[in-house]
Image (cartoon, rainbow, N blue to C red; front, side, top):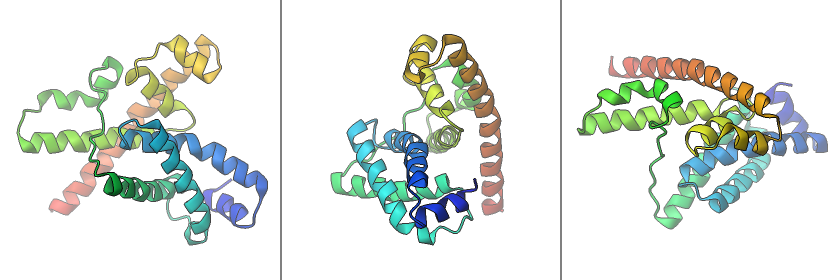
Length: 199
């Protein structure tokens, strides 16, 4: 089903569509929010719920020009900005550069020095990594964060997903490949945009 078709079902009041919407988008949007509120799970849950509820009331404005998840992330960013404004919190997104499998996608960081321009590039790269993880399908982004940011073992990930060790290992392998390919596309796109803006 296309995102626009799903939105139309929601607007029409289809109960099954509401179940699919919340169960399908809550985990991904929660992870998106959690990474941006310093890992505060209670705040992330509240922001995610508020975002999804507001999204339902604004679905009539969704035209399908962007993926529904991208549209939800835009709404979620506004909720996060509101939370930061209310609490005075300014947070940096943590980077997973110390974990070997993720490091391959971040090798450019090794050549960075300590000047402000390098720090800006580091932040931009961090955002690209997060954007790639946020848009991986299913639980792939979750699994990669659990493995390389939280440091969970494959067995622990298998338990979280209620699958066998072999299935978790296979999922991680597919997720790594998807991350590598997705990161390359996102990075190339960002480079192209930067080139156009500077030219």
